[in-house]
Length: 115
Length: 112
Image 1 (cartoon, each protein chain N blue to C red):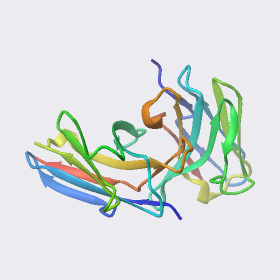
Image 2: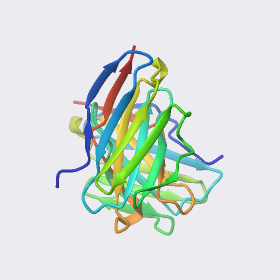
Image 3: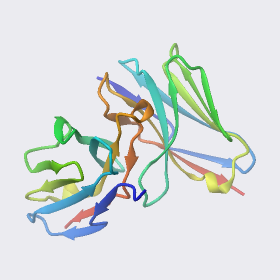
């Protein structure tokens, strides 16, 4: 199993630029999650898809953030325009309806620095 | 609002001792709690799940308890080793949805 694959692993960008983070979930998983992790706030759920449909986006901080899942094997999280306070590690995770207790599997994260 | 909290940011113990980490939840009754391990620069990795009707769950040197009266889960690592040093996160689902909310984690350091 390849696991959840995220790209890029590291990104440094200037304030105001558009950032696109990409995720390939584990094959066969029907749920996909985007989390953000910072020292201050820990792991925060941004958005959650089920069968490619956004179910809960209440964690998306503001309109500058958007997420899409055009098919079962690909999702993007976009920040436009980016701001220094968006600097964080962004994790994508996936799970299967067959997973006991909704165990989720995380990617290695995308480390974003906005300067 | 529903909260899940790990009150200790860090825990330092000596190799061979038992590490005990605490997770408390407020304003909801989760059907289950999960524990994850996160190493620096890596994503969290699932360790154990315990359901509300289970008092205790074990996996090798790991033990998790779930006390619905105290609204608390304890995570124990017996005979701890330096390789157990990591951040441990507890998590549970909000309501009936599949999305998990996480505590901020406890960073465990096991000294030789």
